Picture 1 (tube, helix red, strand yellow):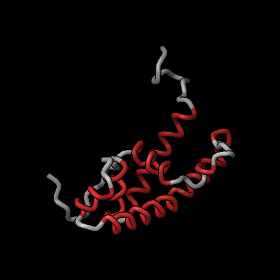
Picture 2 (cartoon, rainbow, N blue to C red):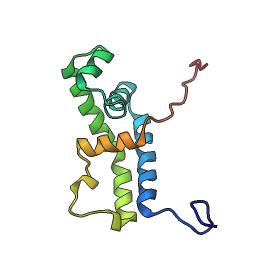
Picture 3 (cartoon, rainbow, N blue to C red):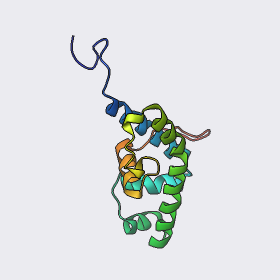
Length: 130
């Protein structure tokens, strides 16, 4: 039997890396304070501009720029262990000419968030869910 469910067939390393990265990104997003998580998801998953995000959240564009900067910095910090671990476990996937591997720029981080999508947020104690 051929196909993804066939015995002995393993997904390609780049597919595994993408699945693992998406999981790490979702986990990091869940660790962010809610306002930072919301800002990143609105910016990168929903595609809102800074101005539209400011209007939605009732803040100035300058405040949103600052919030996004803090959120991206915290995401990089939260993902540092994953990136370090990935580089040591799967050296062939690390391109030594690509500094973005160890320290993703804003665009790369945005793409990773977009690929990962919004994480499932578990209800907090006392929170009513219909």
